[in-house]
Image (cartoon, rainbow, N blue to C red; front, side, top):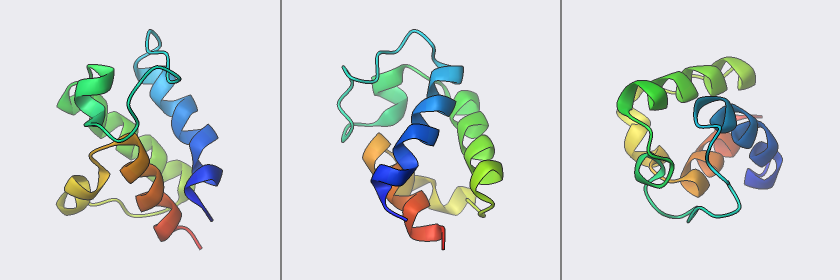
Length: 81
């Protein structure tokens, strides 16, 4: 799986948490929480939803690897067989 394969699902779940965000306008390499103005609970909700959707473990210890939109997509792509 590639990050591009993850993109539609990530976009869908992020839009549920922050519907006012135009994903075409965000800097996908910048800190996701700052770019989308989401707090730690929203981020946890996003990670939990993605973990369930892809059937992968996304432990809190790995959160630093998921800082940006692109990093999160790459992290998921690397975990999914």
